[in-house]
Amino acid sequence: MIFDPEPKESRKDFFDREEEIDKIKSLSSPITLVLGLRRTGKSSVIHITLNELNLPYIYIDLRKFEEIGYISYKDLILEIQKEINRLIKRFPNIIDFLKRIEGVKVMGNEIRLKWGGNERVNISFLLESLNDWTENKAILTIDEAQELLNLRGANLLPTFAYSFDNLKKIKIILSGSKMGLLYRYLGKDNPRSPLYGRAMNEIELNPFNKEKSVEFLKLGFKELNIIFNDFDVVYENLGGIPGWLTYFGYYYSQKRDLNEALTKTINSAIGLIREEFNNFLKIRAIARDRYLTIMKTLVNCASWSEIKRALEASTGIEISDSEIYNYLNQLIDSSWIVKKDSRKYCPSEHLISKAFS
Ligand code: ADP
Ligand code: MG
Image (cartoon, rainbow, N blue to C red; front, side, top):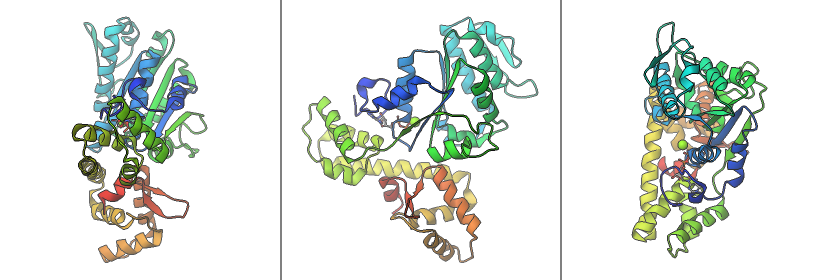
């Protein structure tokens, strides 16, 4: 069902994005990046791809660590362990390849990975043994990979670079925000990044424009045999983020009341956005009020000097340009705001603006 509020697993429940899915499926570079704002369908296209490719894969979703604010090596290793054990159920002979690695312990039909001490397992070696094992290809997927910026006690970039250069059968798929994942974490333009200069397969999922939003709603309602015509009002109120349009379709199909469905969608969106923003503030607690002031100042877009003035007015002290630069960059990296051509800073989508007005 198009209006199912969960990430989709199959193209039959998914609208459009054919080219994007095919491009991911091509695995044309050792590393594929699926970039986009929250709720544009990144997890869905990844699940659909993995289902269609039918290759052995490891899928790790870092979304849940957003709430805690950081990821420990232990957290990451335990996620990988769970996924490898799932693979072993299907392909028991993986164990023969893994058992030679330091930090891997075989316990019957399962493995345990050591995450601490000096014999802790090295993820590069895990990938290497999967590369040796697999006949065709194997995929490592990390969903919301910009959370790796908050990984403590390890750095995966050299692992990604090693795999890129040496492990021909391992394909890596990373999803996340364009600024946070591609520029800040992977350091696309940074000559000091281990991945500098590597050409990656980049797929960007943009929000729908008005035409696509209407088509999406039409298809969803058609599938449910519901007659609906108020497309303009929906787009004006929600914008083109597929996730919000999906919620709307879902609520509308329950009670068939336009205003009620819009209100419900907007309220739950604002609730979610505020909760996610609080997660963002958790590891930035000392600057909490400053970030809130910035978001309130730019609900209808604002220039650098307007933001500076608002910050100084609310704190009563002078705030340096480098501090402001840092706050704005952090907001851009986590895709709360975007910098427009007009040199103004704006909320990255309509409902983010609403959540702070
Ligand atoms: P992301 O991982 O980018 O946050 P999701 O894949 O979780 O996005 O999608 C958010 C919501 O929107 C889910 O309910 C998903 O089913 C729905 N959705 C996104 N894009 C589409 C689409 N093209 N067709 C149908 N549903 C979609
Ligand atoms: Mg997702």
